Amino acid sequence: MPKERINHQITADKVRLIGSDGKQIGVVSLREALRRAEEAELDLVEISPNIDPPVCRILDFSKYYFQKEKKVKEAKKKQHEVEVKEIKFGPNTEEHDYNFKKNNAIKFLKQHNKVKFTVRFRGRQMAHKELGYRVLDKLKVDLAHIADVDQEPVSDRNLLSIIVSPKKDIDKILSKETDKAATTVGNEAGTQAATSVEAPKTAAPETPSE
Image 1 (tube, one colour):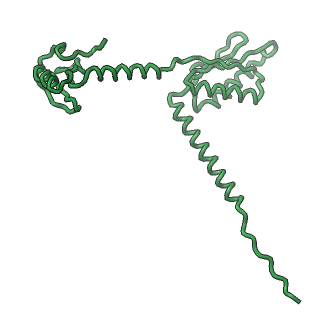
Image 2 (cartoon, rainbow, N blue to C red):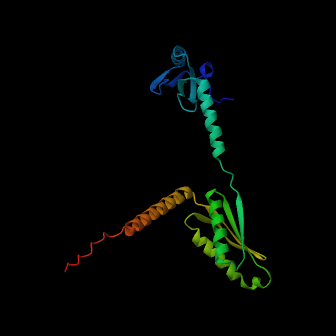
Image 3 (tube, rainbow, N blue to C red):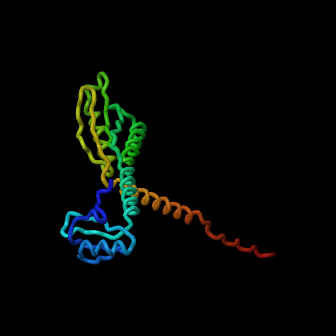
């Protein structure tokens, strides 16, 4: 249901009126405002009721309400429900596997999700928890430009974990990195093209005839 009062639902004696063209008309009586709206074959809509006098505007209320509801629906679509994605490591994770999982974490952060990194220890590995801390410290350093640490390492039996969140401006940061990478590739391609141009050949000297 519309919250705005329109036309004869408005109870104030005077209103600050805005015309259908968006220009300020000024403070007028409610009767005068209703007359102007009727002449324009439009509605008088109270858009700011909590000030004195309330602000009213002359407009097509059905169109105004439709646009307002459309904006609300679009805003709801854009709202993102944050998930916590978990990525598991071992204390002796090899570099290739580490990079693969780190890239997965970057993908989740790009989607504006939180990421929980968990290091699982098995058997004798429990005696070397410092290896797990090293893995988590490396992740914190490698992702520091796009993620903030929500929770420092927490140890729970054979598990060690941290949670990170994407920075608020992660989209802008990643966009700059993409532009920088594209510029670098373009410069390298230009350099290679320049060096591949063959130097002009000089004609061999003629042999004098006998």
